[in-house]
Amino acid sequence: MTNKTLLTQSGFNQLSQELLNLKQKEEHLVTQIEEVAQPDESGEDGLATQLKEELELVSGKIENLEEALEMSQIINGKTPKNGVVQIGSKVKIKISGKKELEFNIVSHLEADPNQNKISDQSPLGQALIGCKIHDEVEIEAPIGKLTYKIISIS
Image (tube, one colour):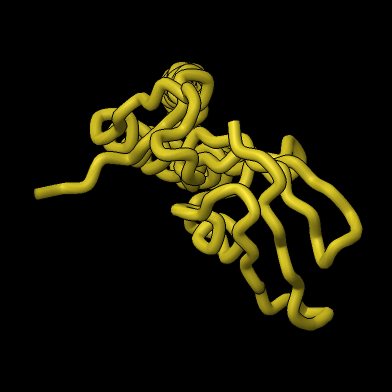
């Protein structure tokens, strides 16, 4: 049995849009390759080769995204079951009794630290999954061990 990738609705929508954009880019690259692949002596073989390599990368990304979306399950993002951290949870934590931060726990496909979306597969995400309010977890960081206390889960 294969495991489903859990995605939030916004994450699913974002990946679907990215897939559409990549398919458009793929079509554009095919057109460009057809235009420059005409035999002549202007030295455009290098450009055709470069475009074909880019097409191969784009096609690979499309294949990966299609598979990921096909194998995904959308989560509703409502209040967590039993008050535990899970994918889709918004978690407010206090770091070593000082600084407070808030994160959304998402799948690795949606992770974006700049938007405070951390992957369930990251060290912090893995440590927080399954925890409850007031639980503390320790994470080894480059600056030493940090203690994270869960303040709220929504």
